[in-house]
Image 1 (tube, helix red, strand yellow):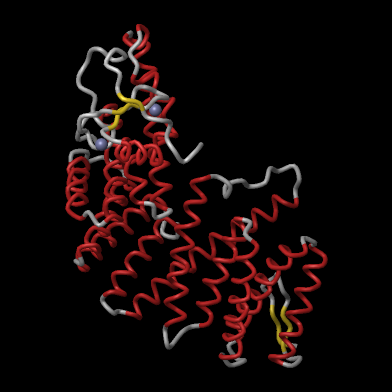
Image 2 (cartoon, rainbow, N blue to C red):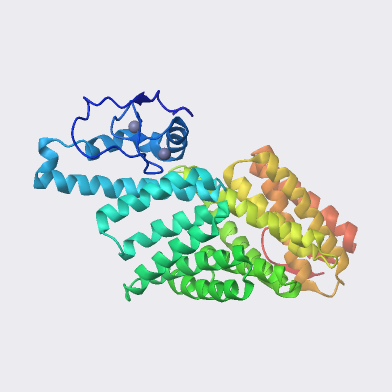
Length: 410
Ligand SMILES: [Zn+2]
Ligand SMILES: [Zn+2]
């Protein structure tokens, strides 16, 4: 798919002789151009055609032909059912495209997909229905990114109204609505209101996905941002440490699955990190982890253990995504962080040392598996490195087994 739309043509009156006046897909003003591919989509000018092409149209151009072209079949009952199904598919495509662009921070590009998603949802489900809420929220999120606060307020009040009218709508919908409302209040600087909505967001998300879910933990991260603006650093630190803990656990599980699958040739390799929406999620998570890393590094009372844990999360994420350059840089940072931790704490805090050293082991292991691709070599190198580190730090007093959690004083 190219970045440029097919050459637009002037609307030929004979090709669409009857029917209402053609309106621009993006701004609903009178159209003078027509997409030459589907011949069913119209624009006021080339700028709007280009924006729509990049935003969504190149993905759905051909899918629109059967929906927007009236044929004998499409007017019959069976044809109408098929059309409704096709519209439902279109809503799903637009939702995922808009979500992906939002995760990548491309708010302007997300607008056409989010707009189409809402229009198509109203078409299928009718106005003021709870099914419109996801589309309202997508459009609101794009507008938050663009700083159109009044438009966001308008969209969110429509979403709130739809939710109010459906008392049995699920926790997940409430969670998303409160998250968007929280972000709106962040944008207007009303931190108290933002915190209230984020607290509700976390409550509903934990009901829907669990307290330790990565979805819920995004709420902690957003809340920390509000506390940071209020200058409440200790709360920010504790929330960031919670977020890091959850992601560390999640990524460790993913990594273990990946390694297990790689060892068993009969199991297909986990391809969840290959598709587009996961690539978009990576950008979002990378951004979140880096914000926390920067916060900790700038803090005069910085906790090297937190630096190492966040760096380790980032390293695992990019390892899963197959980016060796980023992994190498981050493992170095992670190892340095843990080195600072173990030298900083007294020998008696065994627990801390144990976790620290086994994590160094993990980080080093990842690195060597990546570089050498040979497990025997990587295990050997890991144990050599850790044993030299051990001797350097503690003489011969500690025995640490890398890869397992056992540590004993000999
Ligand atoms: Zn227009
Ligand atoms: Zn088209």
